[in-house]
Picture 1 (tube, rainbow, N blue to C red):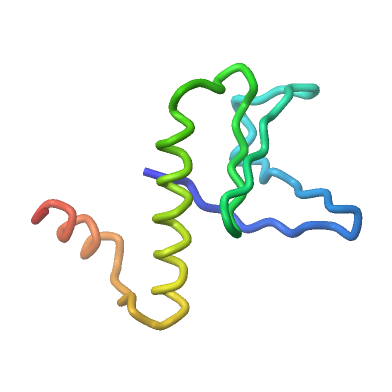
Picture 2 (picture 1 turned 180 degrees about the vertical axis):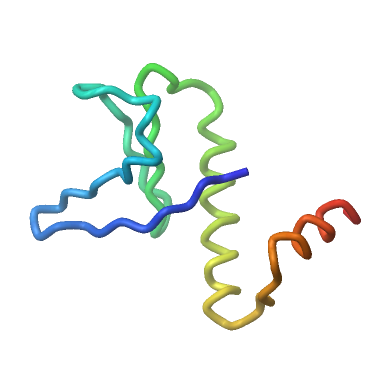
Length: 89
């Protein structure tokens, strides 16, 4: 499952990767940044391979989900209700 955090871009265009998400990365590591519409995909250069199509599809689906969320088309539920829904699928 995806881990989601919120960050802010500075006036210099810098974006901080939340500490909870950067455990597996180290200082000086290089990344590929891919822009797909209003989505940015950040991949470690070391892990960059043919899976880019999957990443772009994930970005597209995420953008669609956010649009639906903004329209109010999602319902609130507890973690336990959510897990019960997942088991039904």
